[in-house]
Image 1 (cartoon, rainbow, N blue to C red):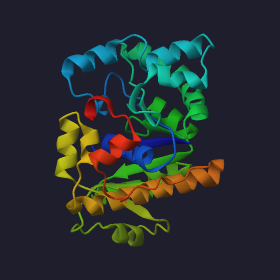
Image 2: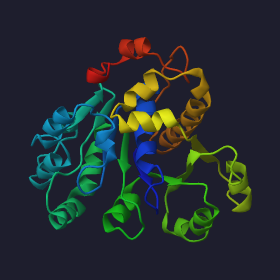
Image 3: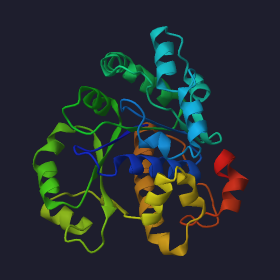
Length: 290
């Protein structure tokens, strides 16, 4: 299942939502997940996982890691679905891989090459992974973004609780998306006028609208390059956050099963909304985060 996380505006939590969804799917389901992005140069996606700056540069500048290496295999027609883990960073062993973005110094060269190869890359990844999650550039007018959106099986559209932005989306931008669509209100404020129920009613949306609450600790872990710690050191005050994230992931899995007839089952953890470091260490090899 190829899933694009997308917004028509910058700064709507799209990257963060893609990251936490990928981690939650990898933790809760018997599924392999690939997380990548289509940004030029490095995005916040890589930064969220790699703590040590020197180690980060060494990993991301290594020639055989990242989307550029996969692109070369596509050009030479040597790409195999099983190649992806060899060119990715293992975040959760055998469950979540991170495919870093391009290291090309010329944006025109990047755009030209990636637009030719991106669909082959994603389709090959889709043969190996149960979920291929792509954090795409914002804006309908971006050629690469449009190509990815048109190819993906599911769009998770990230938007804030601005009534002006919501109105623009439901009256205009939504017409450009002809795919299965999940609407996600980012950095959700329970006290805002534009609640999920208000949005559904006001804009005559008959499907579920999902939300992810704003979390200071989540943002701190993102900024500290230690996003996994947010999951294995959570507390009971964050139950509502994880319940909403689990609800989003359940919908993604439901759509995947309906489309692909995939055999994806939920792992039986002691508590689905709270994770302990001990439990995660039993299930996964977490590397430097453990």
